[in-house]
Image (cartoon, rainbow, N blue to C red; front, side, top):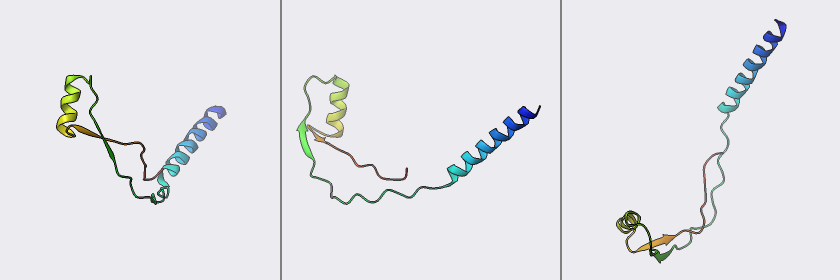
Length: 76
């Protein structure tokens, strides 16, 4: 019986510690100091499935922006 009481208390303590840990908000990442580069444009690839090519032509036109990297900001 005493083992069950200890296990229940341990589970309750873990739940309370987890809840407390979720209440602490981390500080945000510092702002990215560089300006974004000029994006390059490339023509659509040949051999795309018809629905994919139609979507890209409607959204982007004949040229698609080429993105080489990304920066993620926010809290972690």
